[in-house]
Length: 112
Image 1 (cartoon, helix red, strand yellow):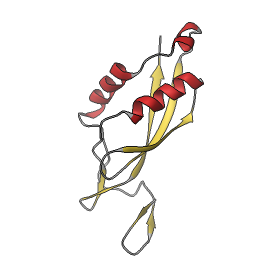
Image 2: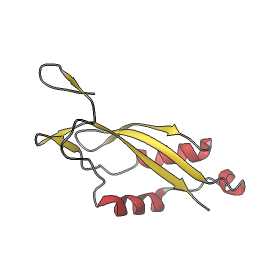
Image 3: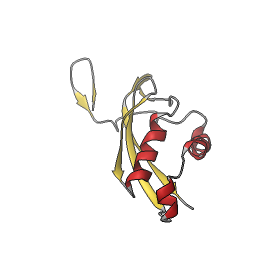
């Protein structure tokens, strides 16, 4: 939720400009591919699939409350969270020219 000066609540989705990774989706994909390490046990068991992770993009672009909303396997889930926690700052969403907090969800695909 976002709050105005009077204390009124607004959902995270009430924004004018969407947030984004600096450099766009291609840069985000590059960041993930350079930083995600396929856990050894998951690789040995040939586990593949999608982990869905959600987080808050703060007004300063930092990511908080990173957690899995649909997991695949614990080591893969943990690795997805770890990598998002080391992400560089994002470009925050904005409303009326001011940065606002938003919830954002991304899929992370593990493929051998």
